[in-house]
Length: 311
Ligand code: SAM
Image 1: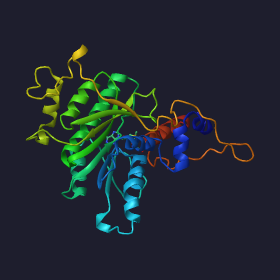
Image 2: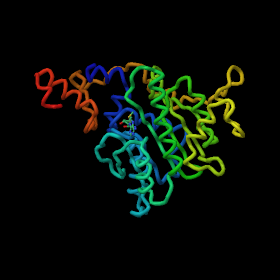
Image 3: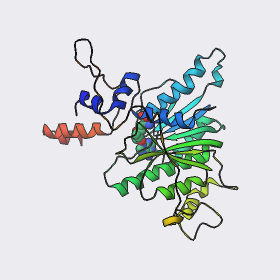
Image 4: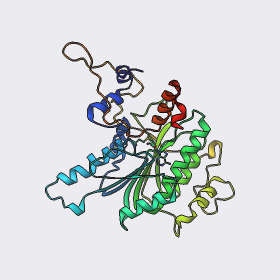
């Protein structure tokens, strides 16, 4: 698809370039905030799976820059934003970057060290695996990222804090909902207007972090497994993911973002300049080390008969 054609078919892709966002995903976080005010009173945030960085840009623009520019700002009182990804990210003002795997226990330790004993008010996670198109597999890998995010949450989020995580809607959605409800009394699955209807993604907006009494983060996985089984729920009243029919758990699902605003599934005419042509903008920040780079190098080398040199 040419750049101009994508600009026409994807209004949020075009708007992201016009407004200086590295990815169209920025609008998803902004629209979630419009509905849930997730940035209210936030001083410390963790952005999991952050590259190329449009959510970190939103955090920087909404939290860090206004605080820095405020006349009574003090250096040691500025919001702390820690962003993590497997991929390296170009710098963003006010954002500490960590390159690492969120499923690795050491990554959680690095995040905790940055918070220096303090806890975060908000953890956001837009993690997505490389999608295979095999729906069950993609949903499973995605759920592993959410669990990794939740593990980090149990170590760094303060009581009363919020956790926003991308989810893939599928047959295990109600199980996931029940698991999140163990830790958050208010869980809503939201679909921002900028997320296409054709996409299975949605976002779990989890509010008011309240781990079960006596909870030990080491027991997280055992606790979550219990929720999924009909006999293991014990005294947990949210262990009903396995119920069916009228007894099933109904998940609060909310469309968010200005519903009269741009529709991500529609094509929009391109704005023309004076001579009647359209000028497509370049992406704001191309990825610095995309995973596909090596594949392209290998392909190019093999076309030139030089694949051995790269192996
Ligand atoms: N929120 C980002 C933004 O606004 O620019 C976009 C995130 S992108 C949809 C998904 C990211 O998840 C990718 O950059 C990928 O590298 C990252 N990711 C996937 N698995 C990960 C893991 N195990 N640890 C850390 N990052 C991971």
